[in-house]
Image (cartoon, rainbow, N blue to C red; front, top):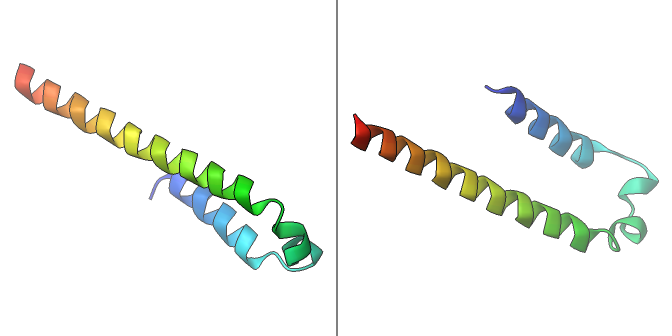
Length: 64
């Protein structure tokens, strides 16, 4: 498993297991749209990165 995987897992677990007032809905509701937008941007970036990577591998196979 890569370092990026462990970093993502650590961030998710930290946010999920974080007890206390930071996890109270009063504080989370105003920030939730920003978190959703950040997640969507990250997901789109991941899809684009994978497509570029797959496209690059196809070009390398065609050239060989």
